[in-house]
Image (tube, rainbow, N blue to C red; front, side, top):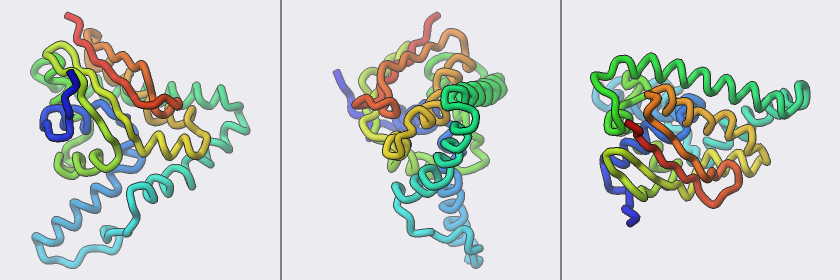
Length: 219
């Protein structure tokens, strides 16, 4: 039975803070989120905020295009033309997996226990950078998730809309997007604990009709 996830705090937190493309938060998300935090802090203190913290007025789609389609993607396309696309994709995948594996192992060591519940309540992103409310708001605007199954040993979900996939696919750069944004998901699961398995059968970034994920904890 399918259970809608939009109003479920547990599912929402697990989806928004952990299992979506983690690198995306560092590529684009925290710039917007830090601005939110700055504006709230200014309201509380009454101090005049710096212009860098002002609302730019960009929509989410415009912000994604600015961050990726007009800067990151052209740069990666230029590199692909120099070294070969296949080689570039391989290098980006390797770098993505290495970074998130190292980060996950380092942070997972601080947890008192390891199981599926701990994985979905654990925050791989440094909480000092911003608070949960800001991150949840950001993710809720960037993706459309739906929980299919949630048990103590498994969690299955699909994503019908994703601004990262839309942005990269519109630029005919889905392979670059998958290597940069999506490829770290498996690395995070494997580095968290060898008993955690991520099965991804579909990906919007690859042209499928949705992203389909299933995490299984194998004792």
